[in-house]
Amino acid sequence: MHFQLTEEHLAVQDAAREFANTELLPGVIQRDSEAKFPKEQVQKMGELGFMGMMVKPKYNGGGMDTISYVLAMEELSKIDASASVCMSVNNSLVCWGLEKYGSEAQKEKYLKPLASGEVLGAFCLSEPEAGSDATSQQTSAELIGDHYILNGTKNWITNGSSASIYLVIAQTDASKGHKGISVFIVEGGGEGFVVGKKEDKLGIRGSDTHSLMFTDVKVPIENRIGEEGFGFTFAMETLNGGRIGIAAQALGIAGGAYELALAYSKERKAFGKPISQHQAIQFKLADMATSIEAARLLVYKAAWLKDQGEDYSHASAMAKLYASQVAMDVTIEAIQVHGGYGYVKEYHVERLMRDAKITQIYEGTSEIQKIVISRGILK
Ligand code: CAA
Image 1 (tube, rainbow, N blue to C red):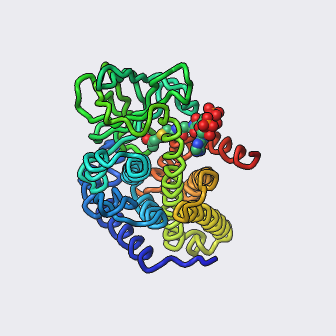
Image 2 (image 1 turned 135 degrees about the vertical axis):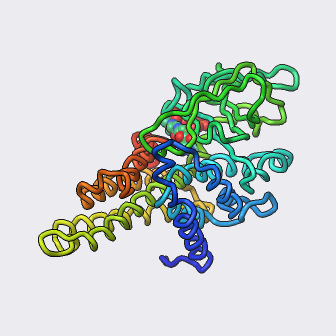
Image 3 (image 1 turned 45 degrees about the vertical axis):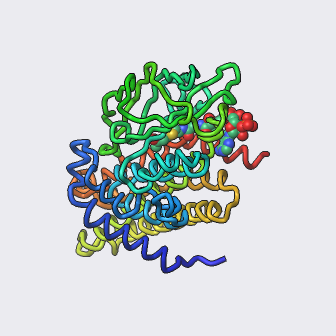
């Protein structure tokens, strides 16, 4: 066992940190206030190779390991979680499944532009009545000739209006329950495909979250991924990896808040000395640093298991469950360290706290992670 990052890992971490500080930090408060999607920034992330980091180079990806991806997610999330969720969805929820289960033709047509960041992808599982209970899919896809006809509504879709390639989970045979669920690649902008209004959210306000409505949308049969009935397994396997990305996001949010609190505590004076010299603040910093380190070990371990080709479903659920709690705890304490300044936008920590909350909800709530973990323990 060794805990050292390689030269390559350190280079990725440095590049991501540099990008976050020079390209994401300027304007992050304004984008949050105006709920503005970081369009130019995401485009640059594509140019720098952040949108398809683990995809093989022959499909325009970076050919990197999951640890590299986690390190980049962590650094970007310290500054702008609205940009990093866009990256997480594109890498883990869209590119990963396409590369693993897509046909060669699907990879040529869809994976290549997604991995290079030329276009964005979205993953469409949640519905108005199917969030945690993901097997209750109401969206239907009926095969008529050489096309499926897609009908239904998807909710809370990240990259909802910015994406041009959507992976859509739908029922092809309701009598078979979750074994009658399939997955399709749907191109944006087609007839019958309507993007609903952008959600006005507590956090990750720049991220582009929409509902999507499908009315008799024609999807060519060759756009089904795998066999009919494979869609639920596809979604679950995809989310196992996605949860590593969100755990890394939570870790980054916590790390960002901690770094701000640490710096502030050395500058701010009270009772004649920097507040970092008061034990009340020192204990907070010690708790923050310790919980972040514990979360980091869980996140890196889940990424490492994935890179080793071992089962990581359990580890990714643990990493997300724990890191998202740490993100909440640390951001709240970071505000406390800042006192009144922490409650105003200029100091960033209130935004990080608002951003942290979603990591306990999307890609499986904390309660769902506990179901996954306890099933793993008891099997
Ligand atoms: N990995 C692989 N397979 C899994 C799995 C996992 N983690 N969890 C369940 N499965 C498989 C089961 O083995 C089972 O397969 P078989 O029938 O072949 O044996 C099948 O899926 C059904 O599982 P269950 O019988 O356990 O179904 P359930 O209804 O009791 O529970 C659940 C399933 C784990 C609760 C699942 O519905 C779930 O994970 N829900 C949360 C969904 C979720 O994470 N949504 C997030 C939306 S995406 C998002 O947020 C994206 C974004 O934009 C940021």
